[in-house]
Length: 311
Image 1 (cartoon, rainbow, N blue to C red):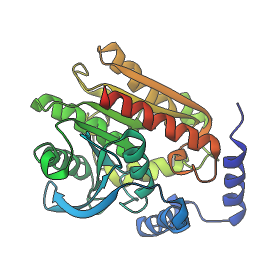
Image 2 (cartoon, helix red, strand yellow):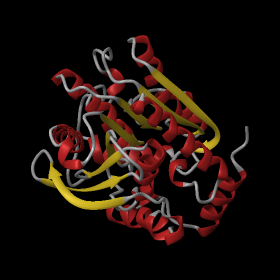
Image 3 (cartoon, rainbow, N blue to C red):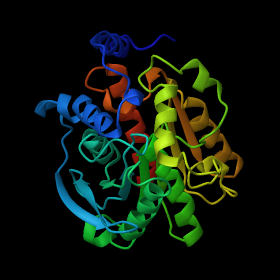
Image 4 (cartoon, rainbow, N blue to C red):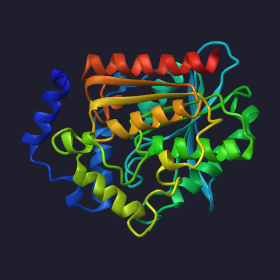
């Protein structure tokens, strides 16, 4: 189907604005632009309501990381979800993904703790993965303090989906029980050859040149593109992983690898619901304020994840 008309109008507006492509600038400029397009464009009435939030720190691999805890409305007990933001491991923070974390908290009826892991190129691979694992380990041992029950789950979008998938594999190997994983258009195969990377290489918000820029900053000096900490699709054993909700978008370069990961999970005996949203693009999980179709997809995905966690 064609691109959702509301999103198509946004893409046209961005093109007409003449902004330089992110890959042509510095990481600092990319972070500032991304913050402006997300947190900076959000009005107070567009903020998804939750019962409360709390900024705090949690242990990372080499020091404390900023984090934000979101608590849902209603009576518990609630599961706890560790959320990793997207942005190619180079851009993004707690504020760019504030509404996304709120959606998961509200729609999935879960305590959500968002992690502000170290970014590249200042901290290249495997820094983000190591921070994600360290933070999730800490959360696993601090569920009572955070206000949830003993159900622990993971979530993330794009590069954050990559980190959630990586953490799921590590924690499984360590014997930590997990209730589920929500992988939103995840990047799971660094050098994979997929039709969607060609079909959607340009014009749909996330472009191939930007993906190359992200990977170059994060893991350009790393020799093994199939290292499962970078490409979780190439994990040697996917069995025993927690049930997954994998969300993809029709006009997304990452569409095919996300769906391939869902299929690989199923082949390994893991319960995986893979949902492609036609007409939508990479990043749609933060586009509900401009696109009713995106908003429906967000709500449906969070509700599906919530049913998984609460069953």
